[in-house]
Amino acid sequence: MDTYAKIFENNRQWITTKTRTDTDFFKKLAVDQNPEFLYIGCSDSRVTAEELMGAGPGDVFVHRNVGNLVPNTDLNAMCVIDYAVRVLRVKHVVVCGHYGCGGIKAAMTPSDLGILNPWLRNIRDVYRLHHAELDGITDENLRYDRLVELNVQEQCLNVIKHAIVQQRYVSEGYPVVHGWVFDMRTGLLKDLMIDFPKLLHEIQEVYNLTDQKLFGGK
Image (cartoon, rainbow, N blue to C red):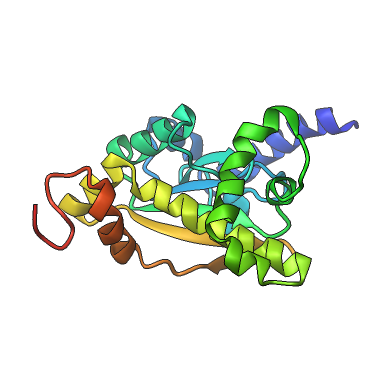
């Protein structure tokens, strides 16, 4: 059996497995979705949200692109965030990068990459913001790893700048934004432990898109 045909065989086996333990699994799945998580990750085929989180259908609303970026010029990403927060009312927004990211390495390559140039410029901008720290790391692999982490942190800031994220958090206490990194070498997820309330407060000094600030004041 070739790999294409195998996909449909796997699908049939998956249906059998799901309905064996819950005969109404797909009936319930078709009714609605109520995920608590929005996951923004990389397109890398080795980093699949549900698999690494141990989640199932309906648990995670997923958006993926090269380099797990959240530029405010990307209408796709902006619409995903708006829908997840405004309509699905997720409680957590996760930006997840991964060590060994090809997008990070490509952005650090001093060459013309054609159509990728404007996209990777977002990562190069992260490098520009943190070049003093990164240039001080002599080991190339460790420098790449650190840029992966810094890129996740900067994309978390981009999420926080989104109006609906600020507005709903100020009014309801959700969603909370998290930064993660997946290590393919070990399979472990690393929580970067970003201080979301502190970052939101700092962001609102310039990017306040609500009628009030998190810690009071107009």
